[in-house]
Image 1 (cartoon, rainbow, N blue to C red):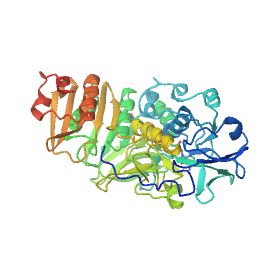
Image 2 (image 1 turned 30 degrees about the horizontal axis):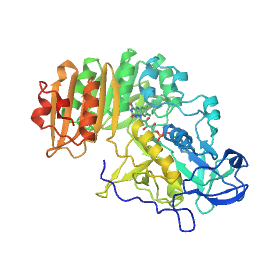
Image 3 (image 1 turned 135 degrees about the horizontal axis):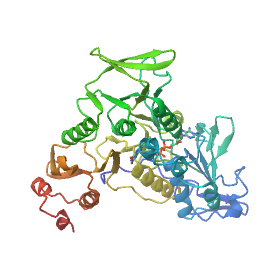
Image 4 (image 1 turned 90 degrees about the vertical axis):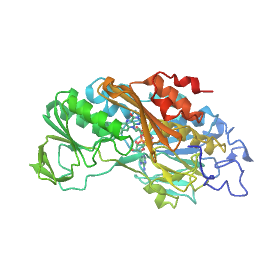
Length: 457
Ligand SMILES: Cc1cc2nc3c(=O)[nH]c(=O)nc-3n(C[C@H](O)[C@H](O)[C@H](O)COP(=O)(O)OP(=O)(O)OC[C@H]3O[C@@H](n4cnc5c(N)ncnc54)[C@H](O)[C@@H]3O)c2cc1C
């Protein structure tokens, strides 16, 4: 994680403050340079964004990353205008419970909302919902919204998240076929679960499996169709995939591996069944498609900002435009070896957003922590720290049969990631091991008699 390339965005062009975007601030009392990028007083920003008067910071996307940028700007002392534009009908809300407690009825809609409107108002953050940004004019430093209005910016944060990858089959738009990304999606799945008998999930990744677990808990007949030969294959080791296969089968889910979906059977506009290439047919009155996401990078790409499987950012969340930062699911981070890293997680959205806010204010706050993620399925909490890509050895600590164990991933001698199942203390310990660059030997890792914290500094 610490192996990052040089910052991508050229610093502010000469003639502007070297500290970053939006820093040549012209207030009512005239023009001044402010190397800190803060100190734009509220009496100045209240004038608005006309002509030479500062426009403030505009954030596109009112999700977790967008809200975090807005609040971090305030926390860092920025006093200018902060405008948060979101194209959904709702203000910022938590997505992780959508595939977990919300479907089970354990988490209510009001618990999903991140901030009460009064709190945003108190922080002088202007939230506009139903406000889709359609283009960016980088030369004029202005965004255009779907209704044709424009908004000037001194600094722009792109936090546009991602959207569902569509199933490329006729019938994918039939009623009863849904994906899960938004609160609206979750509400329609929750409503469908009231009456559905046969739920088919396409995709044995985290979200598909969490939905399968919730549907099963609600007593539905559940089938998971996964094209690969094991579950969550992109992220976890075969031993962990096997554990989840057995867990879901134990709970009565029909998990079909190597399942190539070939046809959706639709009658009177509603899904009836899903066929696979080997001729099998699975009845479905609710079909949940969980085959991944695509970053919302088009407005950046159209504006000529560098994009590669997402908006390219450096460790400080700067894009290739010195006045534009990006954070969260919409980004791809350039690594030192030339590869791209796209992360879709709460931690990534929050940490990149904090870096992005600092970058807007001309400060470096590189995000270098090890990535972490979690998933809840039935009574098993999986917590992952590090990235498993390129592992060549995995050892387990504890017994999968006890539903409490960890998997330690190695590349050569180096520990690169740890999955902890129902082991929250061990997960926290694994975070420390990775943060300190401590690699227990595989023998030490698998020895439950050895307290791993004795290896820490
Ligand atoms: C069901 C589900 C379960 C998850 N579970 C976990 C979990 O257990 N652990 C974990 O770490 N992560 C989980 N995640 C992932 C995590 O929620 C995301 O990584 C995180 O929400 C990313 O935040 P974001 O702000 O980048 O994007 P988003 O939350 O997607 O927010 C982006 C917002 O920008 C809006 N937008 C896009 N384009 C425009 C535009 N042009 N104009 C205006 N607005 C725009 C979008 O509509 C959206 O509201 C889960 C995600 C989902 C969907």
